[in-house]
Structure formats: structure tokens, C-alpha cells
Length: 90
Image 1 (tube, one colour):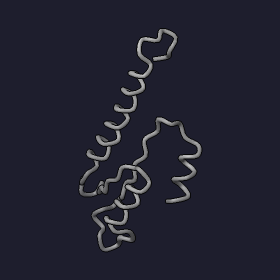
Image 2 (tube, rainbow, N blue to C red):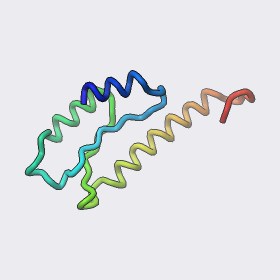
Image 3 (cartoon, rainbow, N blue to C red):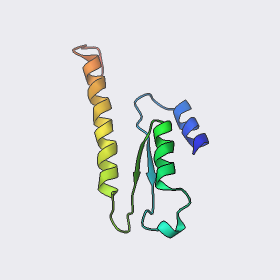
């Protein structure tokens, strides 16, 4: 994760939102990383974190809502920064 996140951050647009998603949360007996460790990693790396299970439909909608909310915030902030500049692209 460290390497992948570094590569993404090195080659990204500044408006990109990062989210760490723990998948298959319903398979607790096969867990390799604890929720606490994953949350801590996400906090240290300044990313959002959610665990989900598509099988049990747990947090799937929440994950999408969280990332879309953050994208909206970034886009809104960017629009406010552009102001009424007629030369700025929408």
C-alpha cells in the first residue's frame, strides 16, 4: 500500500480523492489487516477509509456516498476559487 499510494500521489492531479476500501468485510476469519490498523494507516496517509461487503451489502452505498461527497467538495472549492473569471473553463 505504501508504494502504490506513493506512486498515485506522485502522478496525480491535485484534485484527486483517495479512499482506502477494505473489501470482503464479511470474511472476518480471513482478515489479514485489522480495522484499527487500516484506519490508522488511512489517517497517517490522509485518506478516507471504509470497510465494505458487497456480499452482505454493508457500507457499499456509504463508500460511494463518501467519495462522491468529497469530490463535490473539491469541485465546489475549485469553482469558488475560479470565481467569475470568464476565461476559466467550467
